[in-house]
Amino acid sequence: MSWSNVQPAVRYLMSQAVSLSLRFPAVSESSVLKALLHVFFSLVAPYYDEYGTSLGVVGNPHWEIVKDVLGEGPHKVLDLATGTGDGAFQLASLFAEAEVVGVDLAGPMLDEARRKADQNKLADRVSFVNADAAMLPYADGSFDLVITQNAPCHVEEMVRVTRPGGVVASGWALANYSMVAQSARRRWEIAGLKNIQTRPAGLGLVVSGVVP
Image (cartoon, rainbow, N blue to C red; front, side, top):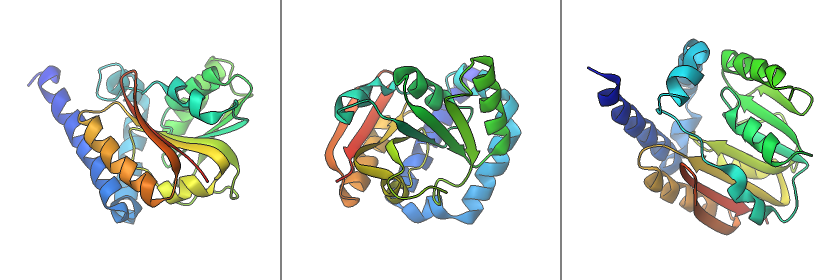
């Protein structure tokens, strides 16, 4: 079976998994799921950029879409489930004055991200932390902008670490991303976020909201 035949199925299954975790938050909190994700992404880390992104299983939404809801450039930005850091690097490029932190469960993925940060001379502004997105090691209101892409969303924790007036956003460039975005928008509403928007963002959609 050729890769072109497998690719749509992989994208579809990923979007279904993310949508399920949004509709049923307990799924993304499962210790079994976290363990499986940790093992899987630790194993694929050396090949993730080449065989995941470049072959089109995972793409990245375009994060400039959040500029007009921020009001002013963020000073501290957090990228959850950062993987090999593509979202964090995109944010560092968009917000040249910001300190960007990427968080992920899988240490080997972060090793790749740090290598890329050194290679692109961004290590002074972009750092990576091995942590659980559901239990972040940060105080309330620590960040101006918190994002995640192509991943389950721990909305309450994202809101907790974002300052009042800051922005929480998630983006997807998966198959059926409109279905995923509908589930996310509902979670944003339940969390009490304001000015909720769902907008095209290059390869996908971004759902954003302002913390009251």
